[in-house]
Image (cartoon, rainbow, N blue to C red):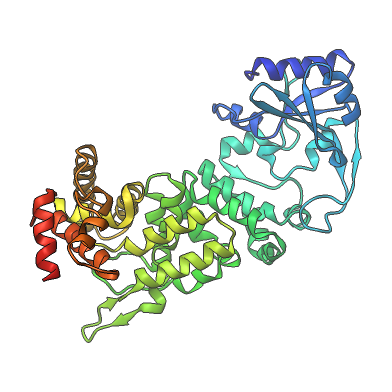
Length: 443
């Protein structure tokens, strides 16, 4: 098959070849092209060593020495960054991340043999077509994730490949090969030697994939290694007429059935994290989880902070967890109250979290999805009309309230009470009405 190569990438490959070197597209761009997808970026493997690449291209492009020790330079072409790496054989991986040393090779086969999975070990050049020494095309057709060679060797070199296997299975909706899966389960402990930043990135890519639910359930022991707090959720029966799954499977199904927004899916990953801790059973055998949303928000904040997510992400996700259990009501005052509480940015993320949660329950709970969609329409109308949902939108301010004789905290309390009255429709956001109501509060 022929693979489309962007003109700037083609020029780099041609320049290397005109100087007597081999140049091939490798890795994800070949995989994606075989799958009929547009590659996100293009990587080139070459027989030229970094100094030779710079000599060929340095007069035309900015060539950045991003990893010369491991044979990699980055060619800047407009807004594109093209990684060019010398064919190589990797040495030992003492840090479970990068080889301690590499040996440059003049052989493409050596370079492909060092890669992680068969589907990532194909190369392409227009003259040769696809070079596929390990059955990558066959595995793409079979929808399999399979290590090159012995999985234990691949995972002991770089343990992050364990999470990468799970991530690719989710992103592509593929099955992990039996032998590769067995090695993942047995070697999951190696993940404790990987930095939390690298684990967090792979986990995020996993949960925002096409099919994360089966991966999360089938490899829950691996996820526990990354996030031990989920262990009590696995197999925890809810004893509730609203639920059909245990806590962890409900989490996985809810996550997959939500929109593919990273904060929404992170929130769903953690929305019921505190349920085992908060579980109570009544005299009739019905399960209840009082306060699990508040406790879950605290746990979510701690987990995400430990895993080095940004402060903005931590704040948004913990807020979504905290309010995910609000009963949806198709009513202006309820919508305004939620908008006032979580803000316009998080309101629509919250309704998506709640929709995902509802879709993973008993069938009758699906009715809530329509209610939530109606609430979204109300919110859009309220925002477009600039209706009052926050204190700064009130037609009075703190100075006005202070002039009536209020002091200190009383000023803030009165403003909050006025906002509540406006949101509930008991008074209008008209200055005279607000002043009258404020006077009554003071007196």
